[in-house]
Length: 371
Image (cartoon, rainbow, N blue to C red; front, side, top):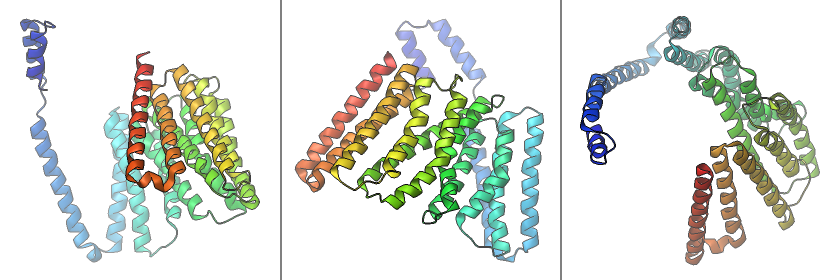
């Protein structure tokens, strides 16, 4: 609805008088931004940049390697200098944009170096090198959600790619894989430790850590439907060591801090490693008893999180916890009825169940938010 329509509605409803409406119109007209002009200018700039990229890509093989490397280094230094300049000028968003661009150029440089010198290797080598080169800059100078999310992505993706690529390797690789599993808890610890950093940066780290930690706890639950041998359980127990230590250290760090209430901190940092240990570090067959135990553990974890979120006023986490429980109930229906759920009647019942769970989720969350 346009401003004019809203003002007319407010006048007719008696919320404001005509004089107030006129003052609002005058204020908005004086501060009106030329959206169309800026949009057209932005499209023109985008077309110019896209044209330059197409010209370079069309003649890429003709450009000498030295010119490519020198141009990349110039861009990299330019982004770093721009960040430093705008940070000194206290221009937050230009400085953050330059820092984010710097991190992107580091990854582009790794790819360029690999192309020029014909370097090959696993993808995680490049990702970990990216983290090593760009991570400190983001961590030391980032202030907003933009760079905080960028650092969290670097910290999560590289180690995760390494862990997945080396999943069949044993020995020291087990500790390396466990270190990758510890990254979410370490991100939460960093968000609690960087007290002088911008709140957006710290919040981005904390949210990324919480989301990835809970996502891992939800995924590992499905291991109860698999056969875990004694050898696999022993390997998983070793993998759990760095992750469990990171969770315990973060729990101790945040116990007396106000950022995460204790009612959430305890299930958040004890529940996921406990779920992992029970699902993967204890041998069990793929049987009905194992699946029922897994369901009970899953429900207990998310119920504890929902209770802590309700006590602490974290409505978003409360909504996610209730949704996770509702989704698991729907999956139970699919597991119990199997192929019957794919028939016409099964689809009708499943659809009604999903609608009912959605309605129940909405009622619970709405009641909680209005409390």
